[in-house]
Image 1 (cartoon, protein in one colour):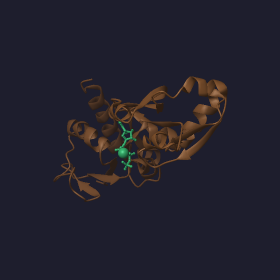
Image 2 (cartoon, rainbow, N blue to C red):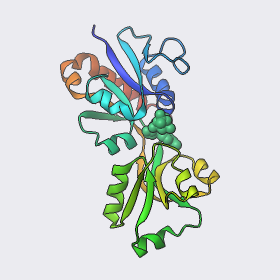
Image 3 (tube, rainbow, N blue to C red):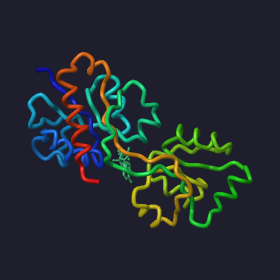
Length: 217
Ligand code: ATP
Ligand code: MG
């Protein structure tokens, strides 16, 4: 039987996908969370987990480096998400994509006045679309992490970032002022692989869908 590869990123996605995988009957061998191996064998001989960077997951699946993957809607929406089939909302890694500013910054007034807003984010495409739809001019500042720092240092007026509990925002004196979209992680599948190897892959996709449905909210 040919190998089935599932692309997962370390951190939230791997942590929260693990219980779903267990329900599907797949457990990584050894200590997946600590291991530095990038390809993990599992209790299913034909299934391997490939450990990728979160923003690389769609590329691996679209280009066939992996057959399946788990990617946040933030990453999929930002990158366009075409090319990979998205059959299942796994309901994990839930959060919201928001505009946040320093507490005390009058966002409504800034938007009303129509001046240019400096917005820092790693989601430049979604941010551009969001403000274009509102008719607000923005200077986009592309960052790769710790977006919260940008308004605190005067680099930007606002950020577009993910929040779950709001703790990081709060601890840095920031507030969410607008929501772009709710986010959760999706199972993605290489379309050509699904066509070619449907008897192997379709049952796995369905097992993921059942595991996601039976998760307690
Ligand atoms: P890296 O940490 O390697 O730079 P990353 O920040 O994208 O990459 P994670 O922080 O593990 O990696 O995020 C992976 C995915 O988890 C995101 O794409 C998003 O879908 C989800 N996620 C990120 N932040 C949160 C959050 N605060 N709450 C819930 N889910 C989140
Ligand atoms: Mg991160």
